Amino acid sequence: AESASARAAGEGLLRGVSWFADYKDLSAISAYTDSLIALRPDMVSRFTVRGANAPQNTAGGRTQFGIRVSAPGVVEGTRPALFINSLQHAREWITGMSSMYLADTLVRTYDTDANIKRLLDGFDVYIIPVMNPDGYEYTWTTNRLWRKNRRQNSDGSFGVDPNRNWGQGWGGAGASTVPADETYRGTGAFSEPETANVRDWMGTKPNIVYHVDIHSYSQLVLEPWGDVFTLPPNTTSFAQLGRAMVRSMYAIEGRYFYDGPIYRNIYPASGGACDWTTAARGAMGFSFELRDEGANGFLLPAAQIVPSAREVVAAVQTVADWMLANPLILS
Ligand code: 0X9
Ligand code: ZN
Image (tube, rainbow, N blue to C red; front, side):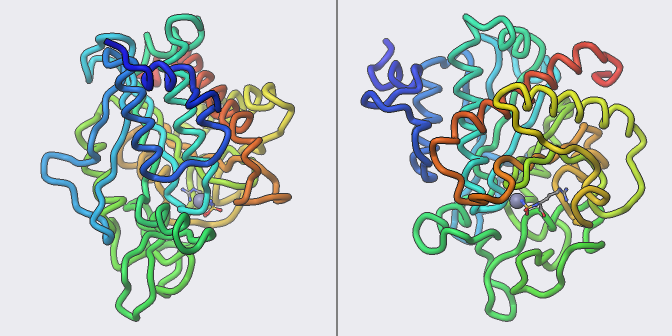
């Protein structure tokens, strides 16, 4: 009993227009998630981002949701898993659309695309499209260029930078102690519901072997660490996989993504997501900066949603193939 709307979503179409033709707000992203579930309930499910206990509500009273995509009927926890998140930073709209396009592609092409079938036969995929729902909603209603969450700080200013609030290296270089600043680290590691909920959720998913925290813009593939100049123990693997992702992204439309460790390649940034998933969870944690190189910046034209998202799909496909070819990483 497949509904008409589910079929339409399955084709990436809504009333004859691609859902990916324009940016979508939080409620539309949630609704599209439901339509993917309706299309393939054997492959897709929704989860609330929480550990054993109830999720902490955000300042705006929201919880975060995620999308699990697997090959049909795969029992959760029986495969290694890839974890993709976007929209820690509210104004980076292309990142949420790219995550949704990844989910859509996995669901719609599993039966027909041998590459996607290989990916999902080997790995479960967890996607948290909107890590920072309060901030994202605020960019739609009030301030398009808002970055942080919407915590009210002690000095009356608003917002902690979620990507300075994770526990690895928290309070180190490249994070601000000033609440009004764009890189304010918060009052302690995981002081924010947005990061603490993901920490707790990830504690229940020991099978996650890869994570990417998607940002924009600058066209970069970033590796740990963000808080120190030194490199992680498995630097060679990070560099190999980083370069492999860059090559596959370049193949989409000839856009070059520069790859390298965060501290050395862009700037010191402590308390970042990928440092924590690497150090504390033993995943290979990366961060992307999607299009463009500054011409449009955060206001990437909607016509680039699909091509930019295809770069993300190509990168994740490469991750699966690289991990399958390097099975030691999976052990
Ligand atoms: O500064 C950031 O958080 C990211 N750049 S952005 O312009 N999107 O704000 C870079 C994140 C690098 N990753 C880590 N520091 N872990
Ligand atoms: Zn960002």
